[in-house]
Image 1 (cartoon, rainbow, N blue to C red):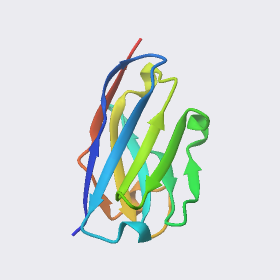
Image 2 (image 1 turned 90 degrees about the vertical axis):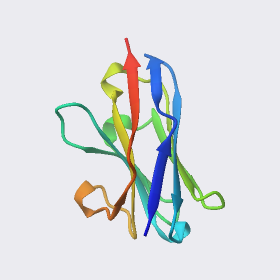
Image 3 (image 1 turned 180 degrees about the vertical axis):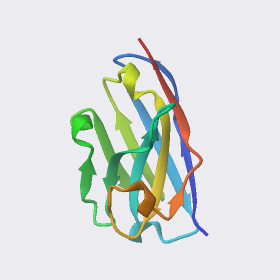
Image 4 (image 1 turned 30 degrees about the vertical axis):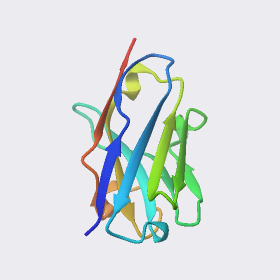
Length: 121
């Protein structure tokens, strides 16, 4: 069984930065692709960024330049560095795992419980 635990969310002001972490256990972390998704109230869950087991990355186009995904296989952790945050970035952020990197949420096998990010104007 794969367990994913997100942390690092909180209440910040517009323009601030925040780094989310997702700690993984129960599987060979280095062999999995990891994705970050977010879901705002009343909206569908959307892809934010992903990193393959080979460290390739992909981003939602509108977030390129502000968000950076990275992974540390020695710590079994994937990060999402977010900068120049905007109120519209307010959402619950989830990490997810699957063998290969895709952007479709329904294709991910394992999910964390989510961490709330709130950006005030």
